[in-house]
Length: 388
Image 1 (cartoon, rainbow, N blue to C red):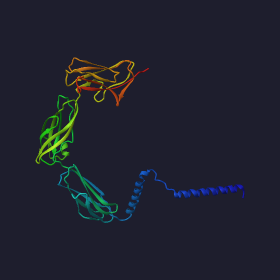
Image 2: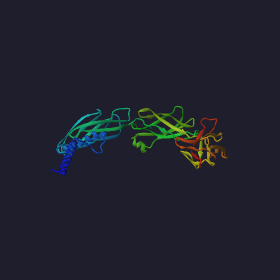
Image 3: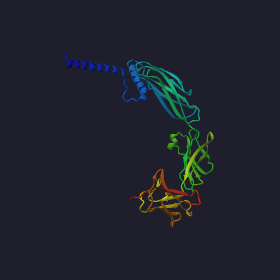
Image 4: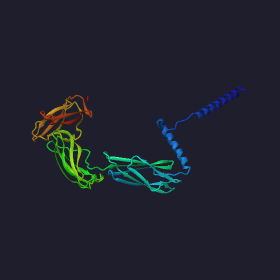
């Protein structure tokens, strides 16, 4: 045998050997499913098993129940009263459907079947009666299960929920309208019953506040009352007199009378007395203040703002603080009582400044130096660069 033939034979043997080894290894290697993360591998395998099981069940005659679960919202319900609901159960399978009512999560929930056996293609009715239990919470719910011979759905789950009607209802909290210190803060809202045919407001108080109030019967066609299944309602108008500027809060104590007697209702409230001093001008935004932009520190730039003492026009006010202090400010009175002219200046030669960030912005505080509360701040957004 020639040398070339020997080499060719050896090469063929090597290739065949490698091929056999690769084939053997391929039989012992398993591959992960593409696109399925390891954290969801068990879920993926369970889904495959369910598909296989469904395919096996489809190949043999079985009962097939519709629906698998029922969720029903009774909306507003009355404690100790019976609420009823009826739903249909269908057999879409090839064998007779057998039904058995199991225990519920509450003795208050019972079910009655029109028939506990349903032929293929036929239906039966299930009548639900829920005697809503007494409770302190607004929301209430209960579950009931019906066993079936459908291997796909061994149990039908029936869930119901509702909201208990209340003797007296008011808002969870109220936000009073903004006001000046010399005027009351006011708000109007509904106080209503979902059980009785009349509501009368007897008194309204709040610790630490002078409260004036009035009430009148409400129009029962109002959307809020209709949506809350109200049976009677009153409109309560409240006026509170805060004692100082800024934010305030408290709790209204409301006594209301229904046919069942007198009831107490507590409603938290909050509000804000407007600052005694206001800033006005074409360059001022009501939420963010004065945006002066990016300016050249090599030249002087002036901004002018109108300042009004809204509460006390005879009070002496002045600039109390300026940030950044490299800015110059001047407050001068005008011919109109309580109105002043504020000049804010970036002087020539001003150093570099960056006070145009939410966490770092400037302001000018104006107020009465003899009063802690008679003052207000004008937010300032400014950046100064010296161009060379």
